Image (cartoon, rainbow, N blue to C red; front, side, top):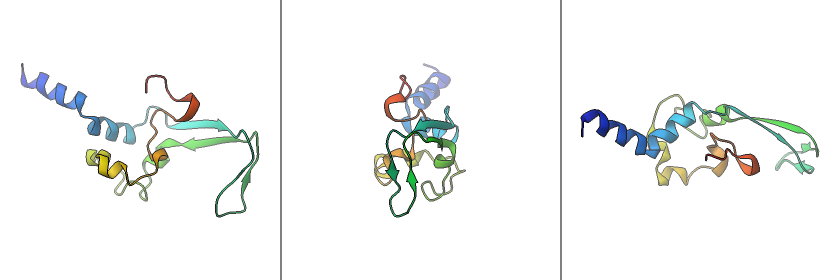
Length: 105
């Protein structure tokens, strides 16, 4: 085995590196969803009406400093089990989420 093969194996199999890369460069930078029933946003008077189209900027969520401190810094340790547990489950969705998530996920 060569050093290049070893490095490739380590990188390909290191989910932290891959997840951090996908956080910084999501293949799907935005999602479109249609609201299927009226929804009152918690702690506000805002109601999203049924049928409203919503745009979700995944790239903005992935670079939000309240979710990911120093968001422009490449830090694979953001994806240790301990760090993942501190975030909302929808804070990382490079392939979308819900019934229309990428089939390759």
